[in-house]
Image 1 (tube, rainbow, N blue to C red):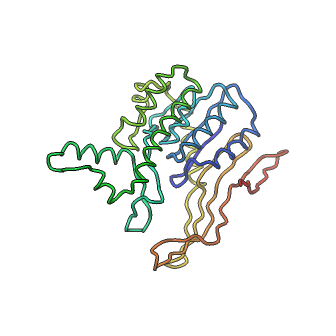
Image 2: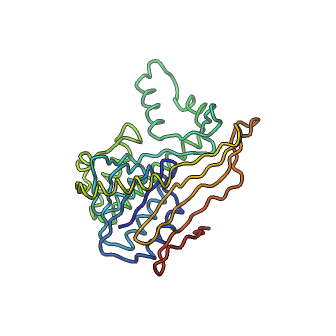
Image 3: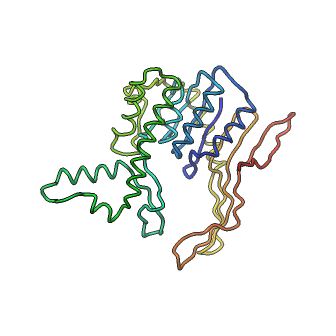
Length: 303
């Protein structure tokens, strides 16, 4: 068994692929593999690379889902032959939302906001349904708030999500039409990005869902408590404009090896620009490994 766990401020990213490869270098190939996944999602392209890496090292994969497995983490679960879900677990839709350099700014904290394809689609749908009250092209008004390049990027991102989902499902499903149906359903048929898809609904979609054994579910929940304590955020306030952030975000683990990413940096608030800047950033990937009966700790360098 291997573990892929992220905190609520962590996420699926490209560096996870190299971290996971380090895990597989330790455990080697296995005919059967179980992967405990707990994550709120992240980079969809990284999800495809992670699934490709997992399938390279095992032909029979079971995803163990005791808790949330959202967005691109759902994509990783789709790469398993079997998805085993407990009473607290859920998958989510995979519709696209992006953080773009030209996205609208939240005036409260002067930061870019995420823009969702589904949100834009619903604005246009509401416009069409009330066309008697509105005249002209809705985009002329939408462009006042959302840059055209953001809308173009969203459309491209949505197409990317569907393609990646189909590619992931094809690792263990030969029916191309079924892959296409499931991919389009997960990308476009839900009212919100975070809609919780429970085991009952996941079965109705056509996924190979089984019930997670109660004893295994309880053990995974205990393991999640250990990771949650390990990843508990520690903020040290120096004054109202400066603080230190120390927190573990992503944890990947197998027998005798653990690779994790740790935030370790100072934050300084620039009043005139109404934004935070990072100082003294010592954040890094780190590895703990059992070698000849001893636990060795080291920085894990990822370029």
